[in-house]
Image (cartoon, rainbow, N blue to C red; front, top):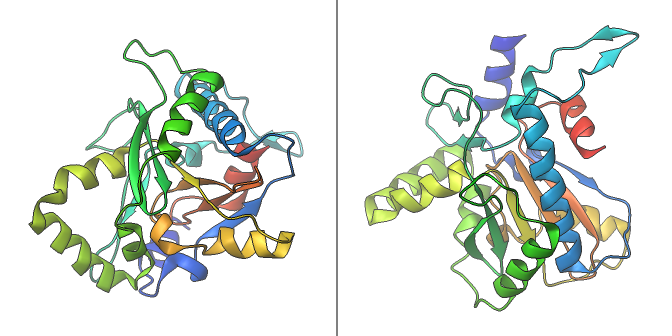
Length: 244
């Protein structure tokens, strides 16, 4: 199914927001927004470490081991718009051998894109408490330009917009975003119901999303949280194992 998979997802030309990306709404937590975002981030970094050092237990079905290959597309994986077909930028590739050694995520808040290191220069993951302190500083930042809304365009249109961004001198910024381990989205609003939360996780404010990123953790003002995921290299079983 490999060739079918690439054509089915990378070949589609409509917008991936709503039409292809998927979401999960997590169980409620007593934690507030900053604390929950920090805990989810720290836990995700710890999960990535088990993939990198191959200590993650093999998935099984009816007593038989399943392929773990798709776990390689969870972190530092980004869909790149193209015309007539998209591509996928990710580690474990000829251009990027081995696991991602990136130390940062990108936090989105009020349309701003902010780099946040989650691993120190010596390779030590920052604690949830340290991450929470950094996220509080992020919340004090002013609003951004909402450039993430471009990722909600139809793919050929987004490819043209991305080329224009690069021509305008944004290549290094895009590179840093595309290499980031994952995104953390902080929302100002509080959904009124699980259905409203699901709608926000599926599409939300496009100016505060980067729909091309494989994993985007979304945390609302009341601590409710979920995930928006990009589908081109991942199926549900891989994501569910990570979320569990």
